[in-house]
Length: 88
Image (cartoon, rainbow, N blue to C red):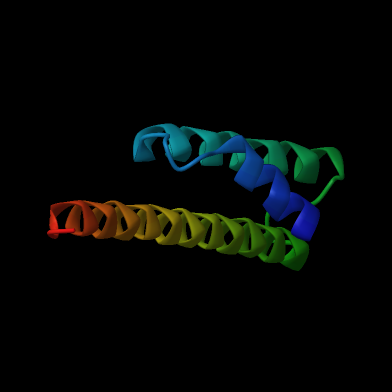
């Protein structure tokens, strides 16, 4: 699953607006659904539910990483601004 996580993480980046990332996630979900159909999995198959759960969990993890990245960036900018405004 780590390869899948890396694939999603590479498909989005923190500078993308949230709506654009949601579009990417939608494409990922559609691709998984097509793979499940190709494999002949029925909608009530437990593997389908597990795969959907893993996709959602991966998306949440990627979003958490993005939020963490953006927060750290904001803190660094605030720190830099504070240091620049302090008398030398």
